[in-house]
Length: 325
Ligand code: G3I
Image 1: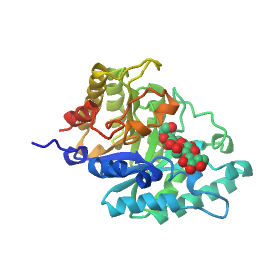
Image 2 (image 1 turned 45 degrees about the horizontal axis):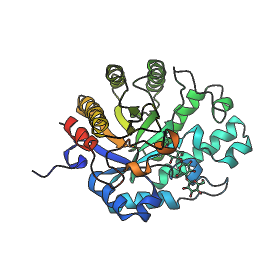
Image 3 (image 1 turned 45 degrees about the vertical axis):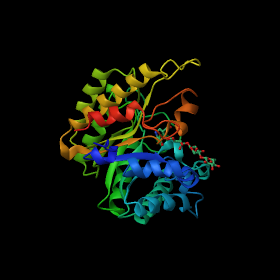
């Protein structure tokens, strides 16, 4: 039989991080998104820095484009991300607001954005990456210094999003969650506090920026522990690095392709072991190796996704499929 696509076989959403300029600029890119995926995340267009252009104005052009693209093509949108220390706009940071004014403005931002996309964006990363490796609060200088109790502020951000759209699924998102026991313990402690205080949280995302050499037993132990929260589990930014030594002479040969395929299969097999009511989506952070963020962040010789630079399915694509029930 003709091989099924990812979205045809999966019993949960298959997402991809996309960029407006690639959807507009390259028909092969757009066709690949439509063929293989049924959900999109904005790689950066739905972050504060892109929307919140000044204290008196917002620019929704790019976010609207992506939300309309999804609507026109019967796809879902996962909103990434409302509050992230790394995407606060410069004008806001330079204002050095006191905590009351700071939170009042963030509340208006969250309310405006979530209201605008109510019923169109069905899930949000309300808060992204607040913990450092090991589980201490991340020592960033944008949010943490403003509040005596940053976790309390994050909980109120969830309440603001819920108030704007009672039907949206609200997520906390972070990286290395299943492989960093300290960070995972901190996340679980925050979830327990949120639930005890009636903070509306529905899910948790582990970005899953892992590699062919990421320890699989560690991954599995952590994944099972994360699932014990009972929340929706989102593998939210999946890509699997292959050039683990960051070698300038790395060759992505058949052996390397096979290692990557087996890693993807391991991960989708693991995800399928979740109770059905905790399955949400697996999102790859990008569509094609050609545009992966990792060639600048990690190494130019990096091939982490399911489609190669020519949009052909790699062994990793089949590995992803093989893990699906
Ligand atoms: O394309 C615009 C250009 O038009 C504009 O003039 C220029 C100046 O602002 O920005 C360009 O956009 C860049 C964008 O990537 C597209 O390439 C932004 O500068 C740059 O900041 C942005 O980086 C994104 C990064 O998050 C920061 O938002 C990456 O694409 C994106 O892959 C990365 O994704 C993050 C997740 O949100 C959170 N988890 C980690 C992940 C990887 O860092």
